[in-house]
Image (cartoon, rainbow, N blue to C red; front, top):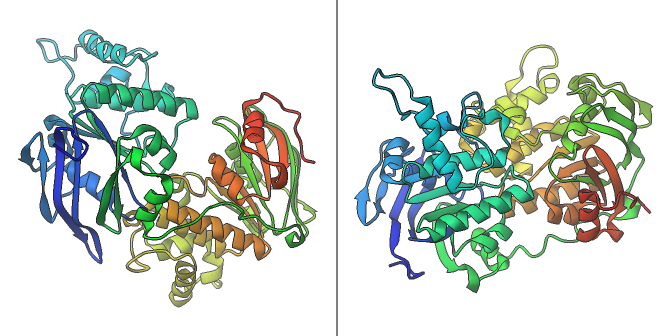
Length: 508
């Protein structure tokens, strides 16, 4: 029995793992019981991902033991873990978009006819049994790439359950889901818990943890801090356990009216047919203007067109008082604009390259002014922003894929700050990173605004939006439904504008 009175399904004892220059885990303990949802939380770099990879056989521990169903196990490959009843669903889904739902569920184990050919009918019938169990609204023959992220995640879970999973690990499962998709996922997880499954739920969103989980286990700097009953704890206590200190509140990180400078960006009638239409706003030096909206609001599409990544079909843009024609990101860079993509892994960073090589990409003119790369200049530039942003890395030659998500985000921010932009557009600056790093980035954005930068933030986190903004712009289905000064913003007003109940609320 564990401390929640549940029969143990999974037990981890004294797990340690080291990489060159980094002790990722040291003496970590963990257990999850039958019919229990256990939250696993910690800052980026706390060791959560390493522990998951060890549990599933993707990595081997240096020491320690793993018990599944009371028996000690050691997995050399994730397939071995799945066959034993331990499956993981990662933040980056592992589905093949061009294959059908059924082909993804039974990948590598499709039923066959007597002559060895795949029995599509039998496979679809078997898949339908599992889809019916989870009240899926799509068919086994549909192509996975045509489905929403929420439905794709359901397929991942169905695939795991079809292998008779006893323990299911979910790594940041709601990071790309809408609010309604997240609620549907929670309903499904509760159903699985009630059927006796053990679930490990990894999330940076503490409000989700307290809504869903029975207990909370905390890691910090590769060490096990402790496990608490959710009903006997609160967010402040968990945050304190995660970071080793009391962070205080994230509120009131706002600027003052007297801090505002000249007009940095003026946009009028900005349109890209089929994506957004007639968007107009102004952004001043020293200001943080945050664009909030629900999934499909068109905020990212508007930002990409603004810096020339996609082509706008109408509207005007002025940068520092001068009309701007932005047909390519290089045009935006020349005008002092920088854009940090929400998808840092695909669009923002070269994960297989070092920190210095990533800084080289955005600062080539600065470190190779005559066409010859000045390595000393590149090293000094990289070190300056690594120090300023408190990036945790063994060296400047470390590959980015070996850094935590929060440190990757800091590197991307540093790469663009090194270009010394006037206008900084930051898309989902704290998605997928821990609460401690989130506050660091919030404070950094405020400091940059205080230094005179004009900052446009795109965020789906309402609490973040209220914490850092001087004004809040709300979009819905490609339209700007209102711009509110922070003094008159409430959660209710923002959500009314985002949901389209009232589109007449504009800036005072």
